[in-house]
Amino acid sequence: MRVFHADRFSLNLPAGARFPGAKYAMLRRRLLDKGIIEDAMLVPSPSASADDIAVAHDPAYVDAIRAGTIGARDMRRIGFPWSVHIWERAAATMGGAVAAANAALEDGVSGQLAGGAHHAHFSFGAGYCVFNDFAIAALTLLGAGRVRRIAIVDLDVHQGDGNAAILKDRDDVFVFSMHGARNFPFRKEKSTLDVELPDGVEDADYLRTLAELLPAVWAFGPDLILYQAGVDPLKEDRLGRMALTHQGLIERDRMVLDGAKKRGVPVSIGIGGGYADPIEASVEAYANTWRVALT
Image 1 (cartoon, rainbow, N blue to C red):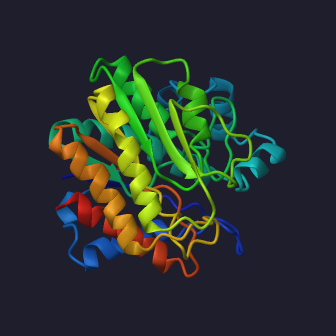
Image 2: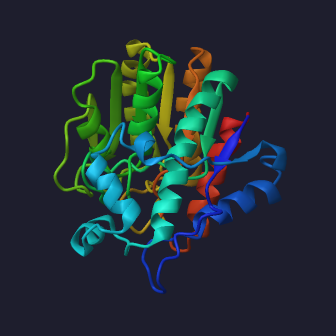
């Protein structure tokens, strides 16, 4: 398995920033320290070009991020102040998503210790998402003829509104989002299949709902699954409003990854949201996803 990472590019966020940017490097260290992955499996994420990113985004928006001409109001919508570090990190994450998707087709499973930027739309970013890695990966591989059909399985606690908006007119992409009904974004987009869950949902109800709905993904017959394995349904997450345990998230990951393996469908993983306090709880949940992927 190849595991891509982009934490060589720091987000360089100001002191006191709400986004826990250090979690990516913490995850890589934890995976190595616990022997979950070996150093030889790690591959630096290649940087995407502006043209690569524009497969799913307005070129004018891409250029504004790259050049730093984007307005302060637009950056507030994303949640970061602009810096060259934002462009460098986003470009590497987008390139890593494409590389991981291609690697999954060859190896059966791959992924990136980043990604899941599902709130980025065609011409704007939002919710800590600058560009949309899964939309870029899907459109790049479909355009190259690498696959005929792709499914996005988005289990972040927040709806993948950017995925839905960018990919809404395509019959070769199935977007499944299972998320909190009352959580961000407060204006939802229409995915192929949306499932809204109440605040405080616990393991049993969550897993029962997922088991009932995953067959729709398998019935689509995807050649590749892009799995947004967000860990913000964890009860310790300060933005999640759900109440899953670590074991519940492990069972969730098994349901998706074992189901795909059983059907011979490759999977590329993006780690998605994670805002626990302390952040180590999110890092542990991310590490568990990779434990499951390697079994």
